[in-house]
Length: 178
Image (cartoon, rainbow, N blue to C red):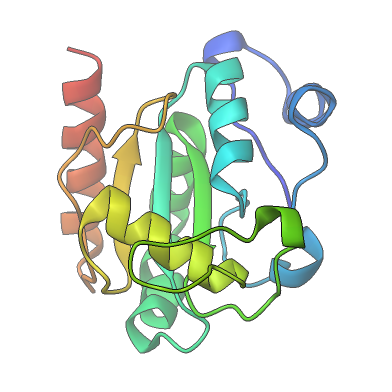
């Protein structure tokens, strides 16, 4: 479930996928998260940053949850909207991280957290990232990162309003390019 959008480089999607995978590796956790999000995404921030650097596009980082009612509503009503989806695909590398996923991390990726004894699951790691980057624990939480992983936008949370969400994206993209 990978699609990299490199209109800036005038590459085809198929070429971009091969280029990204050769540089950044096979999409991590694709087998777990296939069909959970209507926009083709990465499910690992480091891999998303790798591809963002290659494409020189910002990252649209979305924190959600398997059990997130509002995340589900945004998937159904906002991220599935053709105009919004096309705009995201043209302008961003998308990374979707679920904070309640129970997939156990390999031992070499289990680290100490500031508030937990040890980060043992993918969801723990994603929660830790969300608090570090966004200083919030609610889902959905959406922000834009530069290719280095620094937050460069105001945050967006749940909204049922397609125009409000698309306008937020456009304002943030405009501020990046100015």
